[in-house]
Image (cartoon, rainbow, N blue to C red):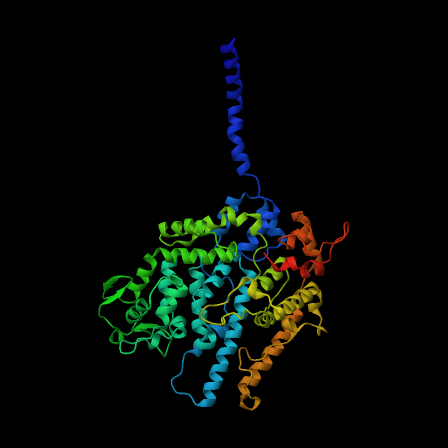
Length: 509
């Protein structure tokens, strides 16, 4: 009897076995749902629109992450404006004081166009993660137009970050260290064997690779000697190595001795375990949580080292980590001004032919593109919110909630964060009107006229957006908020767009 029973049981299991084996496959093929899709897209890009949420909701988490990583690009899809392409901004050797002022003003106007161009790219890009990582590197390898003063160099550095956005960090470290904008910003061009300048050597250790506490003052002094001779050709802004200015003597760095040059020092830094852990910790705070999980950071940092600093495997591990999806880490990060502005425009599918009015918005909110506050960049997260910026953020969102009014010729009672036409970008406030040349006055007026036209062309199409919500099976709150609203609406009522955008939950991701 026992034998017969076992035979029958085995037969039943044999018949069910193919179905049992299929269960994990079916589970893995199940879509992650709209909440997970919103979280993934909002963290790896900007606030998604309903159609994007619906598309990714049908994918499992692993497939969705793979799709995002596979879709990253290395070139912008938005053409540069002529003012950014024109190389007339190369440095001039002999200028009168008046010519020098006009030259500096001209570069600021061109940088204004570059800012508008980058905003356009963020709005149009098919790969938001590419632009998020370009912005991440801009805040990691910091330089500023206020010191560099050449739009062509800031443009090329921006493209360098995009080309290597999810490429190889070791390659990017070498390239960014020799980038002309970086050489100028960190005074590397004045680093000579007779008078070593320690500025770049210190920052490359503290901010780009090891982090504080993992090097000595002597390491900095010796590394500065190794970087001597790195410079910029004044006439065309190219990086040059001036052998006559290089100290080719022996240096001892991190306990190793040799006739090291700058590239050797960068390789020594890349060989240190602390470099991978410092970088992953920074990525963790950017994409997961302000609180570091040391064990997870070490695990992902090992992947980064094992993959010879290729970024995609490390980011894949980060995006698929348990902590990334943990409920406690959702809505744990404050949106940066760029994420708030670009994400809102993308999420609401607002037509923005020219985003130049939002340049001033970002400046008022504390994130002036191409002009981080100092060599450490923007601190981020909670620092984005203070008594001043919170009011400005609310004004921006309030105006956005009435975006259909952008088309009016002269909107009244419009918050200055959007509607006030800009003056000369980054111009010193103390500059006397009497010192402004006809050139500056003319360009300033052109900017004002541009802002008026740009505001008139901004369009929100409520019907189209509502249809997008319906296609994705989303309501307004689930399409825009990373967590439950702080101020719940009455049961049975539908919140207005203004109510959702002005809820504190909209400020986080």
